[in-house]
Image (cartoon, rainbow, N blue to C red):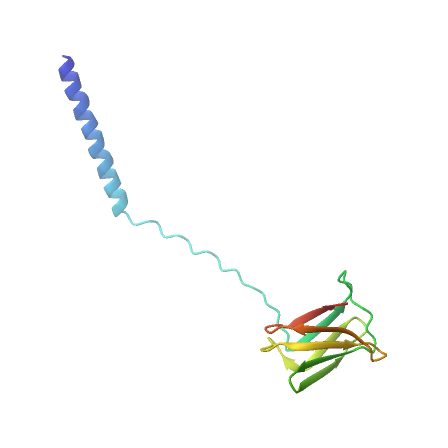
Length: 130
């Protein structure tokens, strides 16, 4: 009787294996459910037409820049803009994103240079900390 039980157990085991294999094959043939496309995140991007320079102190607070001037130089090209009292100068002649780098010089109301730095390419604005 023991041998009969062993054969039955072996047959049951084989049947179970066949059943699992058939289920795996069916699952492989089944098309996966179409995933819902991810919602596209709209990236809001504000662009400027002109290059903007912001003058701040080292803590990020805008400087009082009444009568200050900013000069951009690239080779023989020179552009000048005047700062307002909130530390902002707008270069109307320089479109953005900039294609090339510029040398930026900022002079105070006594015409003393207080900052010099390089504005890298691909910029819409530049923060001068001094």
